[in-house]
Length: 116
Image 1 (cartoon, rainbow, N blue to C red):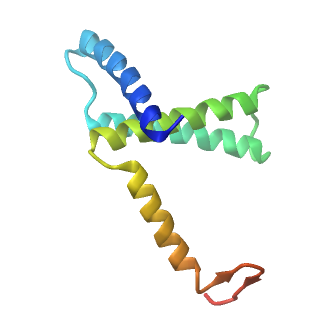
Image 2 (spheres, rainbow, N blue to C red):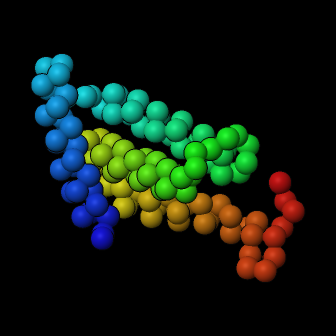
């Protein structure tokens, strides 16, 4: 599935959540509230990653829970990008190009410079 398709699917689900939010509180979540939800998901992800590293106890179904939380975080990123009018695909590729350019003087295939 392409990023555009994933975003459309994520937004369809977001619309369903918005309907529930309107029924409960009279309005859908704001961008800030969506971001707060994402922060909560990242916190849950962090706990699972620490468990995966043996740094804290984890659930029996750790790998499945980790996959679920990563998918939750991806959903949040897709939705936040859309509601903030960010072209996520373009931003991602631009960021990778910037990171690659930053690393180019330091790292070459087969050789790592010790420059700091």
